[in-house]
Structure formats: structure tokens, C-alpha cells
Length: 455
Image (cartoon, rainbow, N blue to C red; front, top):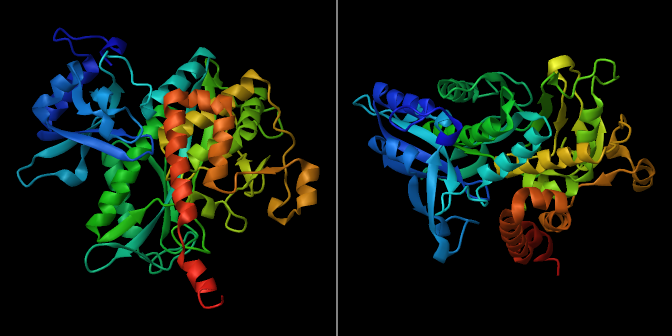
């Protein structure tokens, strides 16, 4: 990171020195150096705070062969290099003596000091570098949803919702309003700007929206958000899950993502003369999203369970189309103009690796700009009501029906695979193909209930 910032006399950037100063001022005695594996699972190495300067100047070594999707045993030595702009004090880790724990999100470098191509954060950085070469920066505003479930007497997670509330309900039905409030206060202490929070449609389901930011910061924030939600829930003897569909026959959890590009003139998606306030660039980007949707679905919806959410009837999009009025389409254009002009991709879910998911989405959109992609006309009717013949008439395709089909689409799509890079695309496809194969061999309770005594 030091090559990107002005160095102090001590060889640290001003940003790094500011972190060291804050560590002293706030009595931080331990640091969590955080990163994610290719599946999006947050990993961390804890070090004493006095190792912070060494972490900035030399990095902290770790065994990369033990991390999902990283390197082989004979290539195991890797280093974590903290990004000083991600420093935050963890509000729930304060000690009785006034000490505190801090968090730094890290980039990963190999033994030669080069950015590790298999690091999810580096994958997103590479895609954003391409956007910058094209003259754009990327802003994303996510809407992550989650469930709060009760725990049993031994502290294990159940699927019993914490409350019986519905969409926008208040107490007493929404028993989790105080938990949400505490989550919000904790996030704000860590630098988040919260825009809204509410009870979602399903019992025990919630949504907290934080302000849009550049794509890298947003991906960092999603990883932090999930950790904060789980930590605060656990303090209330609850289990928070970002599993897309934890309970059958009710709504699942999505992570709708609002995207816009900015250039030297402002919001590159804005055109007030257009019916939908969108520019030609916005339509091209949208066209790329629609063209590559089957492939990036493997990354934005990366679990077997993700496809239990992507079914008709539960407000989740399965049709590759766009609209300004209905939520059955993959892309929705909200009523916004000027600096707020944007569109919303509704398919991602909160189980995805945010770095890889957004890298795939952005790469698809940029390819749309490069190829002058056409998203077609908006579909203002309820696509759920269309039969196969009418969908064919409108040229509307569906998202992959399961993880196996999504991985096949990913492997066949050079644009999305190239954006992930050969290392990540190969390791990711390998892990997800194995996951799907294991799923196919399992016998579910539904099957036993339906067939065991019938045949």
C-alpha cells in the first residue's frame, strides 16, 4: 500500500501512521487482520497491536495452503498487507481495563511481493482498474437481508424465528427492533452511514441499508456487516444467518445491489432527457448485465440453497429482463435522476463473496459498454404470469435453475471467467461443482416423507 501514498520519514504512509496513532490513542492491544477465502468466508489472524508497524512495512506471513481456493502446500508462504483505510475499532471487543481490539482488512501478496491473483479483494481491484482505464469509477449500494433465529438451550442455531413480524411491522410483532438498533449503532461506530432499516416480509427477516460507496469499500463493508450482525445477535442469544433460503415456502434473503458509474463529468448513468433518466452508457452496462447473467449467477448466488430462493412467487427474480415497475425482472430501474440515476440488480444473495460477486457484475457491465450491448425494451407486465410461449415471444430467458447449471454457464463465459482470473475461476468452479455433486447424492427429509411409506 505504501507505493500509493506519501511516505513519512519513518517509511510509513501518512495513512498508516495515522492508524498507529489511533491505536495508541484508543488503547488498542490486539488487531484482527481480516481477509476472505474464495467462498467469501471471512478469515482473520490476530496479532498484538505492537505488530502493526511490521504488518504495514513487511506484512504478516500465513499458510496459504490452508485457505480454501488459495495455493498448494509447496506454495504456502503468503503475506497479509493491511489496508490502512479499513482500520476500525471493534465496539463489542472492549476490555474491562479500557483496552480494545482493532480490525484491518488485508490484501494478500505472494513470496515475490506481488499481489496474489487468487485473492478475492485483488480480483475486484483488477476489475475496477479496468473500469478506471475506461474512465469510470463504480458505486454500489447494497441491501443485505438476514434472518434472526432463536438458539436452543445449548446455544445452537434453530430455525425458529425470533418474531412473527412482517414487512415494515413495528413492536410488539417486530421483537428485534432493539437488536437492529444495536446493530446500527455498532455499525455507525465503525464508520457506516446507515440509511434505513426495517422488518422484512418473512417472520424473523430483516434488512439494514447502508449508504452507497465505491465498489471496493462496499465489498469491505458487506464483509464487516455480516460479522457485526452475527456478533450483536449472539450477544442477544440469537443466531443471525445470511443463508438465502433457511425456511421453505417463505421469502428468502437477497442482496439487491444498486449500481452506477461515475466519470469526470459526474454520474455517467444520468440523462434527464431519457424516459427513465438513464444514459446510453447505462443501457449498455445493463445490456452486459443481462447478457452475462447466467454466468455471474454462479458467483452472486453461490450455494445450492441459493436456488431455493430463485423460484417464482417469492419476489426473487428469475427472469433475465429489466423493468421500471415490477420486481419479477432481474434489473429494476428506480425512480431516480441526476446524481442518483442508477439501476438495481435483484438476483445476488448475501451468501456470496462480495468481492467476487461485484467483480463479476462489473465485468459483465463493462463488457456491455465495450460491445454496445442492447438490453431491449422494459417489461412492465408481471413476468411470473407469462407462460413459456409468451416468454419466448418477449425473448426472456431464465436464470440457471440450480448451482450445477450456473457453474456450467460460468465456465462457458469467457468474460466473467477472465474477470475472475484463471486461478479463481478454476478453483471456484471446482469447489462449487463438488458441492453440487454432494448435494445430488443426499436424501432429504422431504423425500423420505413423500416416498418412504408410499413405495
